[in-house]
Image 1 (cartoon, rainbow, N blue to C red):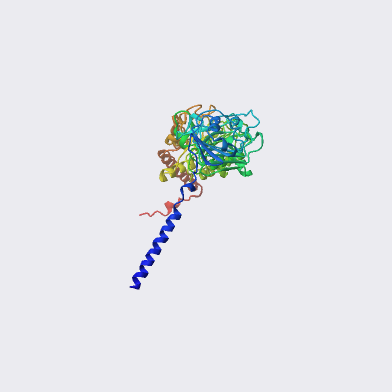
Image 2 (cartoon, helix red, strand yellow):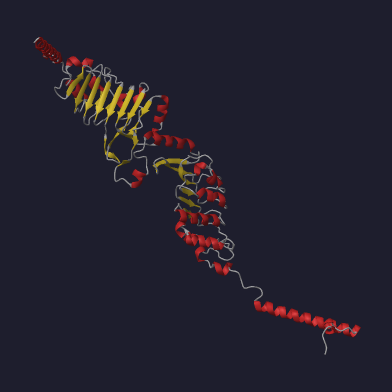
Length: 489
């Protein structure tokens, strides 16, 4: 019986404890504090932070904030703001304000303030903002231009945060009119990757900028996108990686030349063009951007191109333009070693030089190996060179090369002999009758001639022998040796 009474008391204790815990978990009605006020387009997140939606001017903001809170507000967030012109003059009723955030908004121009009591903003945050409706990225995103006119009224900022925006132009000169910007923070989004943004890398080195690896480059187009502008460009590649190559290219570009990073042809290697035409070069530069893919050295005075074959900075070339120079010789072994095992096609323009011969043996070897292994074929332009059409040790093989590899030599119709050629002045190579010029002529002596000469020599020997024997018999009475030993009956 006492066990039942003990169990009942235990149940009552447990029920009392649970009721007490439930009472503690439900606050009194008067203890519930609202986290924000939702009256009108603006609401209070914290006593010092206000969020407003759909604003067209900052003057509207002040009129929608309770008067007793205005002096405390330090942060203002504008969501879905529409096009308008902003000025700090409209913020005089918020004297403590130092941070403004635009979220998913049209960010238009900030005019210079005219009132001395306008608050000094020290922190600006743009998240998913734009102000270009006509300029789109390759993925049809609207872009953001932050020009001197757009930022004119924001001088004195200490921090500028740009989050998930696609920035077309970024000029901070007006922001730094009062004092230098301490931090530029770019998170996500994208940038139009051009040379005029190299200063961002310098700011990062100085600790004044932070750009995340998720920030990409983008391609801008006002019309139809082309395959080259999207695939072979900086599009969707890391901004920091692209700018690294741009900076390196600027550093290693020869002083006489122009260097330009076009984008990426492969995921890890950029497309770099090196333009050095008509600058009086007599030799190839030793230092060029290490990933250069296209070199244009036409209309110079270059005579030796061994640097092309031996310098590692030239290894990734896929277009080599050396037309209109003074090149007269190509080392066959160096050329073969340069071409074999290349991961890329290569086009070599050697038109209008001083070439009289080519390393035919090595070139044929390259084509033979390429056919067997499905490797890449080199392509040549060879017109307007003084080819030695009078040399029968070169001409037949050269004509065969041009004829059988005509798809690899686009200007084969224009390859001609020089005007001072003995046999074929200005004649097209593929039309030359090489056999008539270089085939061996008839032999000096035919077989019948050799036989006749042999018989004549034998007859002459017989006559000489007869005369010798006759002389011996008349003078000494001596018969010939063969008669003495002949048997007689």
